[in-house]
Image: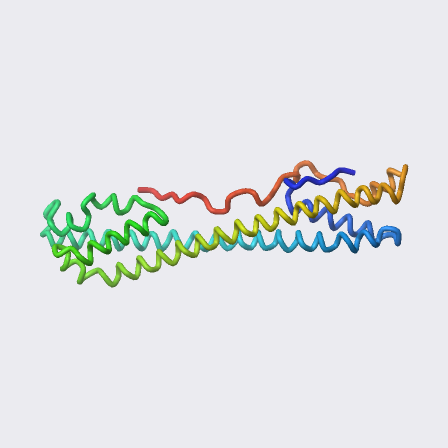
Amino acid sequence: MRSVKPAMASETMLDLGRYHLAALAQSEATKALASAFQPVQDELQTAATARVEAEKAMTVLRVVVSFSENALEKAIRQVALLAHAADNNATGGPAFKALFPDGLDAELRPIGPSQVASAVALRERLNTQPAAAKVKAQVMDDFDKALAAFKLAIDARQAGDTKVSQARATESGARERFVSAYDSDIGAIRQLFPRDRAQQDLHFDQISTSHASNDSGGGDTPPDTKPK
């Protein structure tokens, strides 16, 4: 018999728990232990499933952020093109300089929430700079749609990140309670079958060392990266 550890993968714990419950059901002497252990098994199953689903949902949220960010960048580039056109394609003309005081790259370089802040500042310049009035009339509606969509995507991803963190914390607590209940049953089985190691071992499956690691500690959302 080997104790389980909180860092062990939840799926491995659940496999061990299923075996343990089936073994406890084999005799009247141990059925009471099964009734006490089942809620712990069920709690961990629910928590692990919730964490997996929360992590899966992040894939869609990350894709929406990537596509909406790309759309916003296209809108920003369109603003720059129209500003150059308003300046009769002169390099560093008044419309372009009013909208992009630090150049176009400075507006495209930020990522994630920083891109939102940068785009909001660009929109303010687009809305207030007299030199950009002609550009504003041509692009403001499309720019606002792209910015709003990106804001929504960022907010949704941040909410998803929070949900994943909460699910992992809940699962961690469930693993701790599983470990406590499993260890308690090891002691109880030893008392029920003293000096009968073979009978004791029948109630606990072998633990594979290849699965003795936590499966929910890794990050689900890679850092924002994009080529420039």
